[in-house]
Image (cartoon, rainbow, N blue to C red; front, side, top):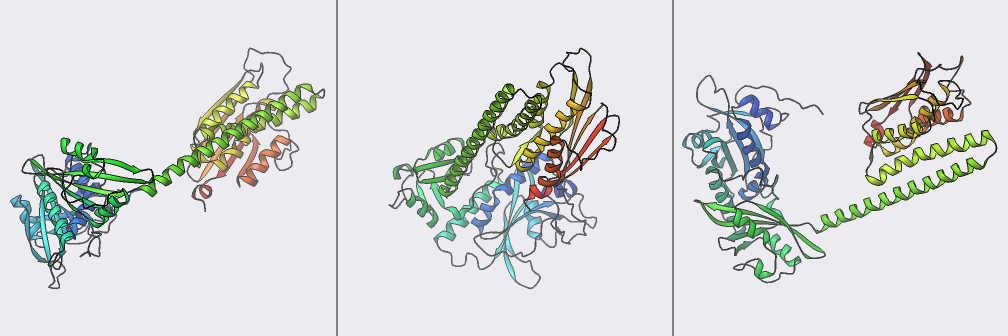
Length: 510
């Protein structure tokens, strides 16, 4: 799908959310790719940060060039709403360009390079909001400002959970302003879990100082029913290899812990650093038992489907072999020809099932099928020197399109080599008799197939609709019936067959 661009707007205007952050950064800031990469990693983790802060998070980056009237302006590169509290911004602000007068605390935090807190009327209706502006430092330079904007009522009479969450956010804010968070891109997860899954706070000695209610529930499912506060996870019988590696490397570590066959918990351990030393860690716990059970069912289902296709292929090959043996015993030349043609059609279908037995999916790599069909046709040439050429690419097709289309292509190739260049006398020739060219195309909505030879062309008055040829009748009925496509045959320096098969309806399932 083509990427939509945002519309340019005057300072203070709101831009429709049509542009990706990378596009906004490229067009309106002086961020280099490495700097944007750091901000992109921050946006990968800030769902967790928004939950911890109980507020909206906005990523401000100075615009370049600066406003001609002086001062600074900031473009909103990203926005995240919390799942733990109410948002202050019903509208999307991504792409908005805000002057310094609209966000003075953001400009102050940028100039000071320090965390700035205060209150401001963001709505223009006299309702104050709590503002916290955190400079984002990376490799000794400022990249932007992370703004936390929340209702003044948040935190007035906080419970233990609220106090712990806000304290954790403040610890991450300290790491952000000192360039310690987010972690390097090759080590940090692309996206952190949300805190609602379950949260455990460890002190510098790896002992639990807090466990959220959802974390307690996850521990209960793992068989831990005692109070975990003041103990290590290892003392509770929970494997803490992820915690050990995270403390040693000072990098986040993700690991699945299978306490019992029916309980699997995903642990994400994120180290907390303060003034150059490890001060503890945040462990996010997510029960993925049902998810892994579904994964195993899918693996089992795929294996079953592969086995079915494998058995179908074997059965078809057995039938093909029986037909070949029967053809050898027939005295009638016409009967032998009919059985050989039936055997070849069955082999065409078996080729599709062979590919499906190796790679289960709704889509089939048709080019691989074509190569097998070409090899099968070449094997039947005997001593005739007919060149077979494939041009273009059909890509991947739905299985219910690939199977009948494989039969169609096999019939057309065989029809060309048998009839385009006259009857074969059985003599092995050293000179090339003719050429058959198969051209494939796929534009997402339809597959176009053309089979062209340089032979004698079609008989005068030939019509695909009135043909008495069994092979061409099969082609016509499969294309116009099962595949709901179009077929045309005509003479142009030889016989040309054009097929047009719609696939968009089958791809979308509509």
